[in-house]
Image (cartoon, rainbow, N blue to C red; front, side, top):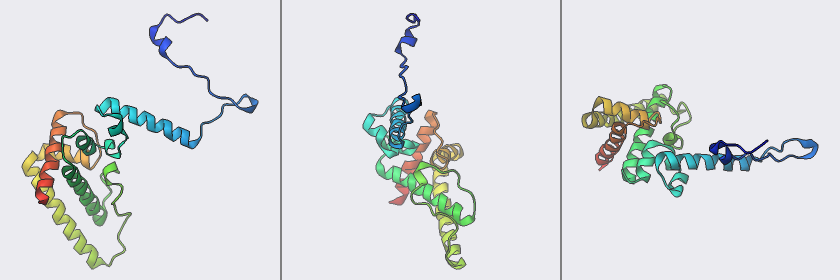
Length: 184
């Protein structure tokens, strides 16, 4: 076979997979595969989100509010307010017996694993508390960024959808600031 005239074909790496006894392919170890997957994720975050390598390695680069915090559009307390909003909604859904909006990266750590084993009266009190907290947060957001902005905010914070619209980014940034201002 001669040299390829296609300039892109020359740049491709056709490395030969390592072979072991019996001329069989050797499968990479678990840690090698994890390292390769992490490298692909870091490179993708770096290219698509415009992050540095150090920022792309951070866990916060895995969701929209974290990316805004890493690039300096919102402060850490604004990010933490969005995290609190997601936890409140998740706990409210768990107490109501509703399914999660999704399993976003922002909600994985502090979420209750299932139905509470507490007595019913404590569960009713907790449900009332989380309902009140959730509704007040949603009312503040709806007043500040409107219904459409609240829908975009929920899509990014609760369902972990990456919306590429500048309006979605603005709704997320303003929503985070509104929530953190309400804590003080």
